[in-house]
Image (cartoon, rainbow, N blue to C red; front, side, top):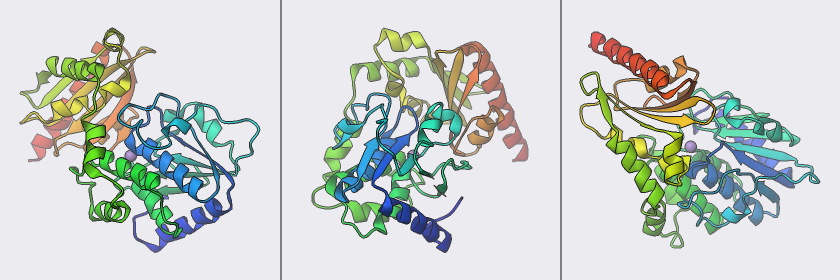
Length: 336
Ligand SMILES: [Mn+2]
């Protein structure tokens, strides 16, 4: 159910969640593939809360934790196997916009007696028995904090640190509009003398690898402009990742270098996927709703940042998406 904090409806969902969380002994948490700071942060924050309250919590994560996040306390407990001999009372799914993105993991999620889904993306259909969908929240970590705050439990440092990293990364280090008053309030509540803000910044944002720098450099060097510079795009092929020993995580944030170019309406990054599919990231500089463009191809996201994966070769997908973007810009210009 879609709700906004604070409201009686929000409180009532939190009450339902707390009732389940309180009773649960064996919990597992799961997030989308290629978990980012918010996904790993919310999973680990829940893990540390469970540690502090004497509950067993299994953290499922299938890919290696990116280096920028692998300093978080507890990251080593992340596992890709759910023990067969445990009856799980509760599973909590963190920020997964759709069942499709979960693949086989949907069935895994349903292995628990009771399921909860937390997310802050737009128009997400909840996959849990209880769904807390707060589109105004900066991050899933902020939603999780809203829940944990009500428990009255003093949150351990490791839990607050994980929440901080989720909020920091999803707000682009507090630069985006989702760095709301509430997001800052939550930060004020979780910060203590024990959390060193500039250390966390450096380790997340100034801790890069050679493959990542090369992948970002390749992306920038290939930048091409269309429609009088209003669309800029670049691409990455599978062989680029192989040649530079890079993973998809290394391409995270590469589109940002494109979206900073002045005079653009839309920035696009096309990434080749194994099964003859191409993943497209779309960014808008403010006038064009790129989520609406992504939705035409069954993608999703936010108005200013969206994504979609399409079947076909790189050239086909590029042509299709760029022409749809030109139409959207034309429609905007005609309205002016
Ligand atoms: Mn998020």
